[in-house]
Amino acid sequence: MGLFEFASYALDHLVDALRCLPGVGPKSAQRMAFHLLQRDRQSALRLAEALSRAVNNIGYCIECRTLTEEKVCQICLDPQRKENGQLCVVESLVDITAVEATGQFSGRYFVLMGNLSPLDGIGPKDIGLDLLDLRLRQGDVSEVILATNPTVEGEATACYIAELCNTHKIFASRIAHGIPIGVELELIDGATLSHSLMGRRKL
Amino acid sequence: MGLFEFASYALDHLVDALRCLPGVGPKSAQRMAFHLLQRDRQSALRLAEALSRAVNNIGYCIECRTLTEEKVCQICLDPQRKENGQLCVVESLVDITAVEATGQFSGRYFVLMGNLSPLDGIGPKDIGLDLLDLRLRQGDVSEVILATNPTVEGEATACYIAELCNTHKIFASRIAHGIPIGVELELIDGATLSHSLMGRRKL
Image 1 (cartoon, one colour):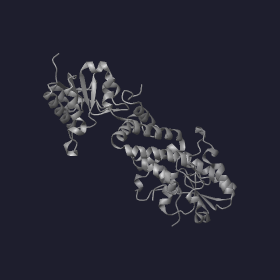
Image 2 (spheres, helix red, strand yellow):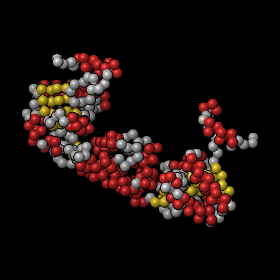
Image 3 (cartoon, one colour):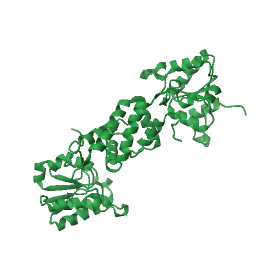
Image 4 (cartoon, helix red, strand yellow):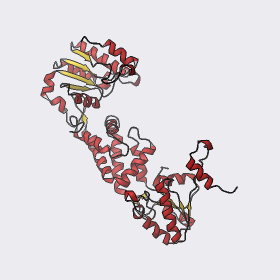
């Protein structure tokens, strides 16, 4: 028997449905359901509408695999970005937001939506590398900037894509890893410090 | 401009709508939206449906103010519980679940859906005390068990309701506060220990 069947099946069902959200356990789901029903029914309806609208309208950009309501996303459609010739490869959509916020990049993106992870059965096709391969063949990419995360999987994925670029004779670069700005040297872990030494540049 | 307008207005709208959930900030909302769209679109639709169903169907029991899809909830309808004569006053629906789980109570409930809190502008009518007053007049309640939380507001609300019971000449009791079972005395805070001393019983 559900927790609130004495009160309402619909409430039980809502608490259960809320648990599909990542990081939401039974207690948080209860709290959310009560909050919405007791204080914010308008927002609950708005959320219901936003969910169905998003699920029904959002697909993947056929050029860069980002989430979009069109066939091709705004960034891929921009002619100036196309002319730029740089292609930044990131793991997820939030990474695009982060790179865009720097104002330092004006090329296009390619979103892997994950990482190579053979142990989890995630191979090159699952992260769209067949699509990336096609794109590199088109000849409008002059440089691939590998901006995957500095994790084991991220590094492995970056290496794999660098190889792919090599076969197409396209210059591939990896974003620099080192000491973050504003952090003192003595507080930095050894791995980061090694990276920053190996990646030193002539002044 | 929204965070993901370059990708999709519907995504931006979903991230924004998810923030109506208690404890969900911008980062969690993003994570939830991506999780649903990339991995669990079926659950997202189910959640949308559960939300609108709950908002449209769930109202308050006219007897005890709990959330229910009917006019009167299952517990209030139960003739055995009515015969019992005891009325347990709790702050919220989850408290009913907790009391029910003990198996020690077989009367009916009254849910305040909050606490008296004059500073926040929450008076007796806002927590349904006019309805409780009507109910006590009906003459089928022999004892009111005050099970509000041991907070300042909870205690104040319990005192207020005890006064109300007095005017109706109905016996009012407060649940006991003291050392939780299985916890050692030296680990208990002073306030709890004072309560447990004041509430001592003859063996």
